Length: 148
Image (cartoon, rainbow, N blue to C red; front, side, top):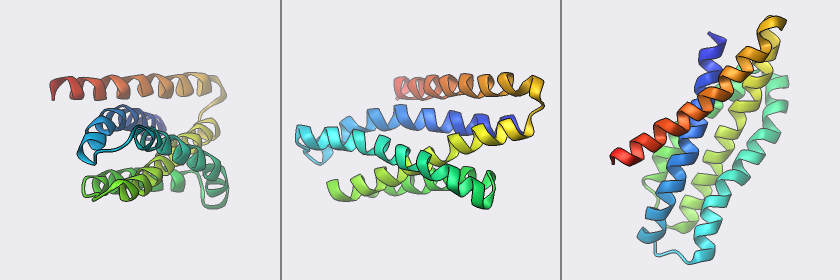
């Protein structure tokens, strides 16, 4: 159960990174963005992820590890969906910052949850499997983009 929850955090975050990178090209053309705006657009997601990583520990310590994971899932769905309705550079910049923040919340919380709930002999295997699922998420997104 824990591996499914954590693995899907990794899978979703990885797929999101790949897809957003590809979508950024289309967004740049759609909104006629200058080179600095394109760079900012791609970078803002990683700034959000950094902020999410920093907040994840405090949220997890205060409300339990599952809370940042669930907020991350919900936020990724909401902000990715809202991004499709963005009307300009400033709007999509804010949405992608929040998107990055949400996927930054889940991964550290799952790493802690995994360590806390796994027997000592299985901790490395559980963490390693979660990392492997990250690669599967990237491969999945790449296949989707290839087929599109």
